[in-house]
Image 1 (tube, rainbow, N blue to C red):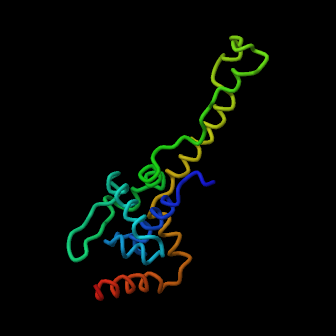
Image 2 (image 1 turned 30 degrees about the horizontal axis):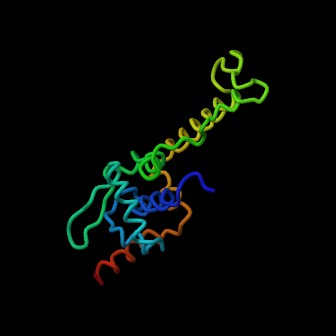
Image 3 (image 1 turned 60 degrees about the horizontal axis):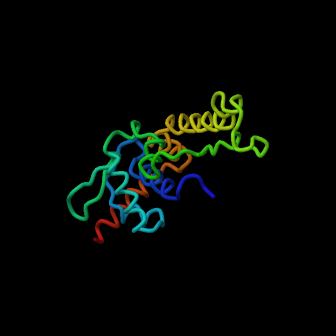
Length: 169
């Protein structure tokens, strides 16, 4: 079972799609993003509601409407997106097993409860490191990584694809 929902992946890819090869943001509708990525429109619309509430995107007016990034792509971290979509999750919930050993007859000795649980400490440290890593990477970082791998024409093809959809609407 995945720790983060598929919505996190959809949200990250969507925000990457809203940045061009130069790092400039482009307005896109949820429908365009859903069609471009072949993901369910209704689910992506709910994700964009969360992204909007978190202040990562703002709605745009005009023909068809849509969204744009609320701040520069280099200022939106992967952790921002994760928190917007899935909330702040704890990857571990300590049940204080150390206090429930059968040989304690329902009352653990003081030494057992002295200080934080060692297992919890390790898990909290792991979560902190994971979140630090997610915070290090931005939408711009990921977009640049994608465009470095893609042929030079890819950015033009995406722009043309979007323009074609808009001209048909």
